[in-house]
Length: 360
Image (cartoon, rainbow, N blue to C red; front, side, top):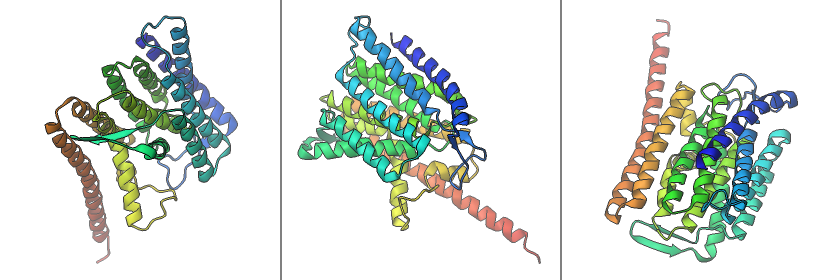
């Protein structure tokens, strides 16, 4: 059953994504090059509809199999229904934005409303714990903090979608780890949903990597962001282990670090954080001349490393968890320091080359 839904999702994404390329050209929904772009030619940006179609159709088949009793213990649960609701709502918001455009304020309002509805229906993080401390009940803060997490991570995923293959590879890796966590906790419904996301991302990937014949656009990035964020909340809700939340955040650690560090850096420098920019770590690597394939490969390695650390963190003793967090932190700081070192080296080489060309 798992293999069938995975293959179905990948095939639907592959076929529908191919169709959306022609649709993008006919409707003029193209990503035009600008000062923030890493491409020089107009590129279709409706590829996320393929991922959306894969998720909806595969989960619909999953629901039908559950109703008819074909899937045994793995049932189409309320959590899966709420995830489908949130995913459809976020994807439709992205489709409208891709076709007609929305102001950032209106798009954010729609995201908050959608997240608020899902949280009001019972999907929320009720407590947190770190190392041997906790769990600490969040009380009345559970609602706003969960809404902030859902909308925040959806936008983080949207912001980080700027390199060929990066968003699709990231979502596939995160979902793969979430499937392991879900199986570990006896949640086949969430394990199936996670594998469906993996299949959809891999079906889309051939059109986006290594050469981008299409982008997933807001439709795909916002959809993946909200669904992955919901998986974190639902996995935490279904587990008595207070260490699980930190383990899941470790899985998402590279994106959280890149976005969080970039935001703080821009605030420190007095920049307008609402203006478009090219200062994420992956964008700075691209400006240094690294290829899209190299950047995506580097992030893939970091995702796999952080995901493994997350698995070990949840399964080990408290004595080792501090070491794991320290190692994860040093890894991310080291990655950032390497970007600065490469920038410094490139600037020095440019100065030396400029000096060498000056007339005597």
